[in-house]
Image 1: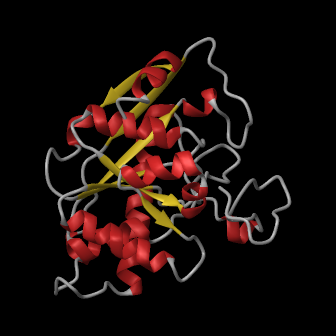
Image 2 (image 1 turned 30 degrees about the vertical axis):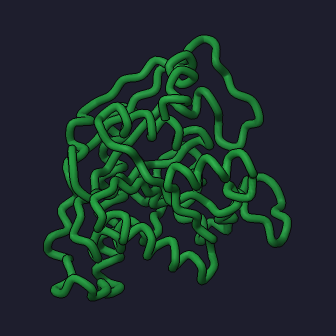
Amino acid sequence: MPILKPTLLAASRRVWIDGDKIPATGGCVIALNHVSHIDPLMAAHFVYDHGRLPRYLAKAGLFSNKLLGGFLDSAGQIPVQRQSANALGAFSAAVEAVRQGECVVVYPEGTITRDPDLWPMTGKSGAARIALETGAPVIPVAHWGVQEILAPYAKSVRLLPRKTVTFKAGDPVALDDLAVPQPDQRADTAAVTEATGRIMAAITGLLEDLRGEKAPPIRFDPRQAGVTLIGNPHKKQKKGKDKR
């Protein structure tokens, strides 16, 4: 992060709101909305500026790049083989990291939102399952403005004029009533679904505050809309490729 920070400082004006809600110590899950390929870098900046070293669940394809893969591996990031049985290994690694007191960053949507107006869409269960299995707090975080630097699936960044990027953290999502009774017990499907919904609602509420407008009453569901879950939704995907 110290290497990336000067570039991020030059590319944007940053507004950090309530970052002190990120626990100073102990295992936790940071759950964010996803609007750009570079928002993980800005999210790392936000988390790092508030005293934590983030660990990411990152798509496995990024690790195949020699330079980036080496950086991600040395930084302790966790590769995820999306839409495969190997994703279970990433989940176990994330659970263990949280139990070891680390701060794990998760994008519950699993990819850049497909919502036409960039509102959070339906979430996947990873963040909820990690939280319910470990008992660690989930801190919802919303951000806005990164998409002005690099729009979803755009090929070039827009550095001038400098854009304002705002991040806001919320209170831990209330999940105590859904916690599993035994430390190594898996949460049932109903509990995971409810927890995922609460996490997405918390992120969406924070984003409404940042944008000064209301989100659609029904969260966008790419499956129901017939939109691809991986890669650029505006392009035909090549079979076997893991893209985001």
